[in-house]
Image 1 (cartoon, helix red, strand yellow):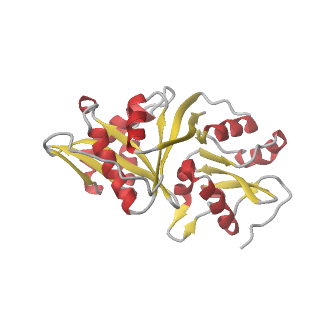
Image 2 (image 1 turned 180 degrees about the vertical axis):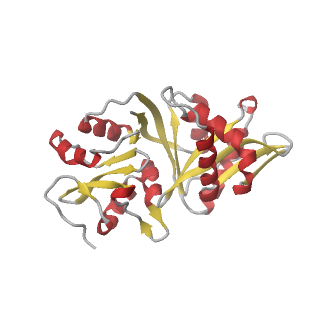
Image 3 (image 1 turned 90 degrees about the vertical axis):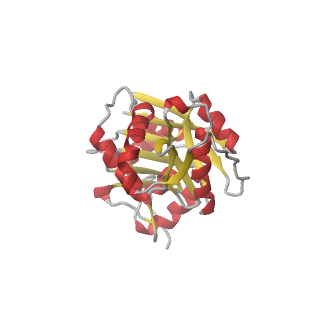
Length: 288
């Protein structure tokens, strides 16, 4: 079905626009799997209604050229295939009136373009590099980091054992100077992750010491996140061990792998590149 045309540069997308949105996201899924994963269902893309936030799109002569996802929790994910004109501000800005924006994430140029367009000044800017591994890349080599090491796929019954790792990851990698750690919300998030994502846990003599998981599953790219290893075992091959296993799960599904890593995290960048990931550009998560 053809998308509904409009003379306005931005409008709310609806169910008939799903195929146009899919075409845009497929073109940009090397870094936008997080956008796709929030909407993809078994029967295709779910375009959220006004009570769920929304997706707003800009159409040009060639079809949908840009889209912005706004979730109920205030997360905004822009994907621009054109350079927005300052005159578009009034059209896109009206969708956010009466609502709140808590964070903006995406390719750095897209995040900055949206902030300029809406006149936003984030309080915290977190720079990352976006990395990507093609599905036909050579499989990375892994080895047992030490005797007693074991990796497996976790399930909801592992929540108690994994919560110390999950909460430590959030404190170290997610919580910013303007946020506080919420143990109850963290545990609820972990329960949801174990019910919906692929989670790999690495154990040493039966104790969980490292984890990695998917955090978004797009059309052809599955995004990895939540990679965490207890500090005392870092630099000893455990990161490669747990990543090799989660990449094996993604490879079996015949998907590409994507992730983003903080620019300051040199050891992680080195690990991911050694596994076969290539750098596809700067990524940002900004908090308002």
